Length: 619
Image 1: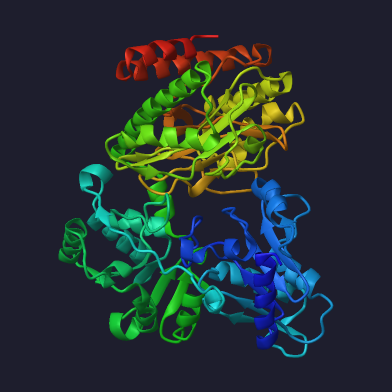
Image 2 (image 1 turned 180 degrees about the vertical axis):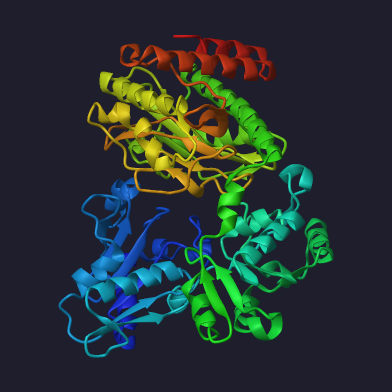
């Protein structure tokens, strides 16, 4: 029997015993992180699906995985035999989990519907969405006759997942003010002023990248993301950092010094699990009457603790101010990001030079070998702290999966024809990078050349944009799709995301996506530009650069902004169908290549610099 099907049946046995009609499990962690630590990869353990976006619902007669367009192909390959069916999201006909539960799975059931959730990995927002859906369907909470009940089942899987990993913990480093451009004392003061403006006495930060940003601290508790599993409680009188590092007996010198430095600044270092005690005693011990929390990251389990205290402490819901503040980089951070992309560009050009020479010498290179070689070049850069995400090294049909996972064993070989896609990035003490290049490995079909050129047009059209103050990503998204739409082609993922400063490679709140997002783009934001095109079983194309939003002047009509591309790596021109491009697009590409060559060639060996000169030649 399929191991995942057996796990599904074991879960159902427990559901029958407890009287649960449905169980909802997310692919997140207690902090609603995009990339959870290994302990919380529950969806993968149950289903075998390793995509970053995927939630599951199990009933006694159905099991479903909800994921978006990036993972449809991957899910269809993994799910057969597991007992799970794919439910598609981000498509016009989507039915999301709350509506499916209330209007499909249990629309005809008489009596109470009991839905269990792992409250540690479910946000209060997601649980409220389930409750709202049942209310809209005419059911009343906790009504036994025709209602519903949400049951909190924290760490439900502990009894089944025998070798479940512990909460991660890794050494902590702190970043100097010279690296970050702003001290943690100043950031905490800013937070306290925000609390005063919002008539609150305390704020609980639960998003890991927000905590890392406020404290100027980094770790490696989550692979590729330099964050620390923790909570941060800021009151008008004290700052409490709930982190497991306090329980580590043998701390290295650097970590101990970091803790001592924070303690001298008035930051209390407390055990991670003590956050529950602190929330239960906010008024008695801290004199807190109003607590500010972000419902999109606060987990349901903590909210249940706060619920028992609502008579003495009110909970104010709102978007965390930290997300927006850290997305707008200061001058020190911007300079660091620019330098990171220069260093990263040198590594990229060394890698593509090496790869082309392997082709010339007739050497066999597979996807995994290519990924490792690129990582070795990045590792030579001073300040390199690891990759910013798992490298997508994909040849041919593998590149048709936007979030392809490169196999470590028996990886496909890069053949001497068709397209190779590499999406990768680095974490440096002074910045974070994310770049995708698609290159020909030899002769390409006319369709491959056409797709390649149309995606490049989309990329350039966004890069050239000038837009008025107040413009959001959803307003600009058409620019990065128009060339494909005009040829009746499209891609199913977002076309750009923010990037943290030596932090998570995916950062909000701004984004380029078709769904409405009210956060405008303003100077100081660092963002990607990454259109793509994917043909299942054939090939995939993506061109990705990173830019900074900058001022473009003011006149009687508006204040205007523009994009300054900081990624520096050539875009292969050998298979461009020039007749599809406009003179303006060609000029942008030629100007970009001149800047790539002028910036990188002095820092490359003579032979690679000469090779790059040819790659950057004007078309």
